[in-house]
Image (cartoon, rainbow, N blue to C red; front, side, top):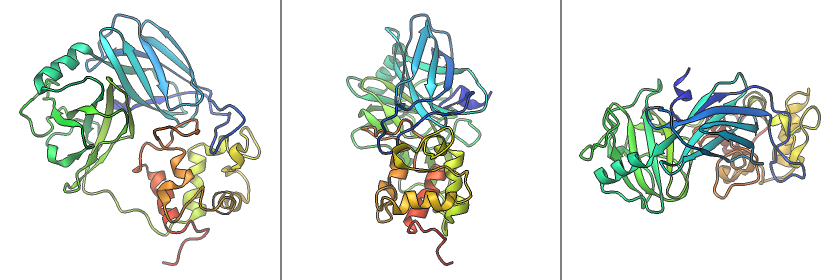
Length: 354
């Protein structure tokens, strides 16, 4: 079992391919999926069993999947392939609402553990750090290396969250509060209080020499959000250049399953009048025309690539758009970066001259 099956974001592999629709700019046909996730709500951080009746909700999926809960065991049905979503789990009154991020692929099924943070643990942190949890959220960020081990030695000055938050505070190697600490311990855990509800992503400060890769995560009022942050030395890699549409951009829509929904033929349909299927001899010409020429400066916007629908629709936003799932964890996703770079270069059919 990989580290992702126990720490967050959790990697859940599921069976059955997606054969139903998704919406890109609005659709008359209801979207949904055929994947199922099963698991158990357990105590953070020791995975101990919890006694009580859990409440489980899934976010960032349209329509909402069917969820069955018995005690602390749950089953979520109707998930679209290649989705990124949160399981918000609560076991009242002992454990507060905790957001666990889950990534779904389509290989085989693995059970997962969705963590719930106890009120007792929260109150221990509040007392140790002199914090408040009245109305805003709490972020538990787990800084790890690329092998999943806790990353020690990351200083508070290297972390940037957002104005108005309280933190960072650090847990020691045994996950106990360390009020005097100024950097991560071997556990790698960092705590922020007073995080406004919405979406959040921990970033590296402008003066640091590390890259922090954290999925854009949902924060709720008076709740806890658990997130894994991969730390790598050095600044983010420069964007790729001289992007070739046919060999670099077109394959993205295949490996991300976009053609399952955006297709003129086959299992999917031409959702929102957009075709992204790659299984025809002239697929490159069709998909390029659909993205660039059919609706200029909407699906791709060379003057402001980050506003292109091909990037914003599959990304997490608040308020959420009509796309039925989140595909890109953040702007560091390799496929997001390829698309962004291609659009920034002018969204050309052939690469620019070298």
